[in-house]
Image (cartoon, rainbow, N blue to C red; front, side, top):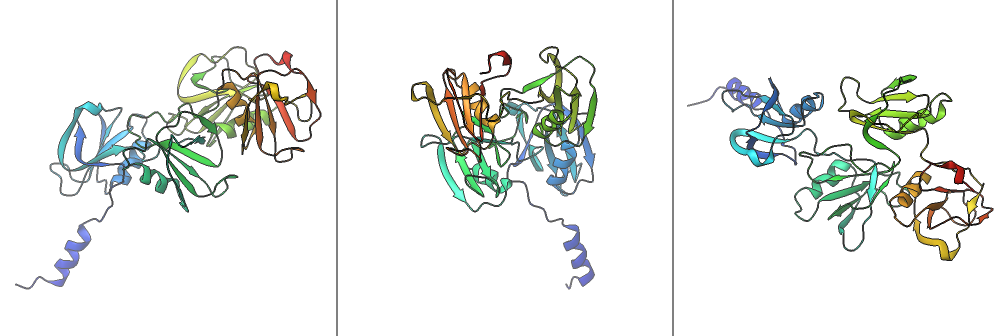
Length: 349
């Protein structure tokens, strides 16, 4: 029997070609409460995008065109129970995004580093390398603008020490049941809280807390800020300004973090702590910002002061000294020095 050409074309064009995201598990779903569903969803990636736009979704099951009774169907879940995984036909399940990274780098040494791979052009490619490796729990992808290594992917056993970065993205291998806002941010930020006081201003379409903080710092009427990430509802990527920090942020908020207009309270070329050998706890190279240097100090129980040499430093460049104390000061061009936090700026030298 000869099949008409028109029928062949029809059969080919009605069989949708799609690629399952690497972080999805085929043939399983969850016996958990469903938060929503939508028909006529052609691909699992489209299902992910629908989930990302919903405040009640962080995981999905997508049913393909052969599924019954709901073909091309996107089923949404909010924090499904991993222990309630059950089989399903013509389906695949996974998180709303295969990446849940933050702007930070993970320290890697011989005990943590599994592999360092170069010429990796995207974070997604780096995450995909980590996902199937049973040893890999975290990855760090360095952008082409990284001052240390460029277009490199570090596969890691863990990420115990994190440093804020604008040129490196790090995240866990599996984004199921993972909060996107984690401790990758400096300790000077408070995650999940804001102020009850009236705000003075708000700015939309602010894509990172660092940008929100910079906008606040440039505004003479802003002393502190709250930033809401892409999952926040009804105002995603939203930056709120507060005229003064009358208290620590204690009012709960979802998908948010708060902080002062500036994490640091140093003055360039003024009161730079002497980096006497007896007071030095550690010397760290390739530290891109003063905030990163201060955060390293804040995370070290023995560190009370830091000195950061910028790219214009007259002795060293992009180097961070962690100090036990600041007894004497020195002249230093392109240097910044300050305490591990700015709660008591009266102690500045």
